[in-house]
Image (tube, rainbow, N blue to C red):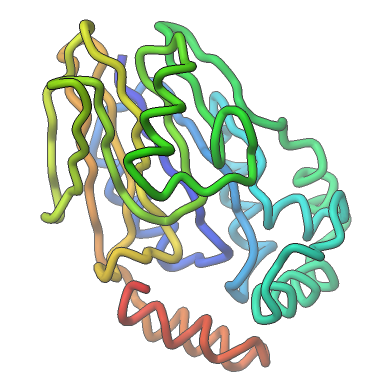
Length: 245
């Protein structure tokens, strides 16, 4: 079984289309989305429409999805993120807002002991940012692999050699997996990478070969930046895309 796993599109249509073009060249059996379709970017309706067409086999909501759908008020957001969310809430069509509202809350357990979450399996809004957090999550988990998003940082934590972590540094990094270990894996962000690599990030898991690959593809960043600025959204959301931060 080959899984296409992706997260954190954040209303970046150019990045999403680039990832979908790359995936069209691969044979995948299941499509898994880890949350945050919208927020920050200027094309919330376009990316939701694209995700609807894609029909993921499993997906969960992100924190921006909740705020823009009106499930939460965004009181925990920083000012620039909240400005974007409130703009998106006004722009999103009623059918797309309903789609966001119906997105399931994580975690969800898939077949073959694979679990998906947006933040932590124990708190969908929690940021997994270090070795300690990852260790605690895997210690409490019965799953072989836990996929998460939210941080926008591609990462593979593993229980091998007591505990280890791997940060993908190239545009395609593949790792052999073992059934004797557990893994906590972030595929990175499609629409707003924050690891100083501005290319869109996603993952492909092959459970037959027991290989996980985290891949990067370039996209038209200038077009995305222009749309953000023309919409009157905070320019920081446009500027950071070129630096991947």
